[in-house]
Length: 185
Image (cartoon, rainbow, N blue to C red):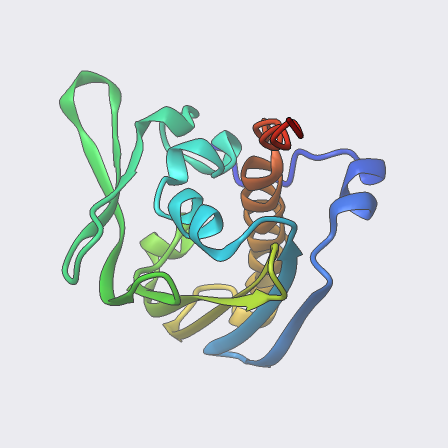
């Protein structure tokens, strides 16, 4: 499994979340928040958020294939991944879901899974005008992290930025043509 940010500097600068910050860090915890505006209405962004196999970066999966990801859309539902040979990984569990506004999960993502931590990942969606949606992601992690949370927080911040960029790109890609205006008769 790879946990490096595999994205070109040029594309990262063009697509960086509008707001990204490690809000707090201690030896045993960190708090990260990022947000981005997606040029799509709230229902389309919500539908995309609920399908991580369409936007989660494959470099941050155990199988190196995003198509193996899935998200059960109810409380206690799993953000999981199928592994070759019949295995699986539970990345997080849904604690709270309020369509189309919020989904909160509990889980230690990626290399944090091997640590004695609890992580709370929250996606909040807000309409911005008629055709855009503001997505804010918050990840609060606490517990014992070998090597210290100070060392891990910047990497987790970068990985979350990659995921938010992926969500934005997927939601905005392949847009259908606008409906034709009715002809005057």
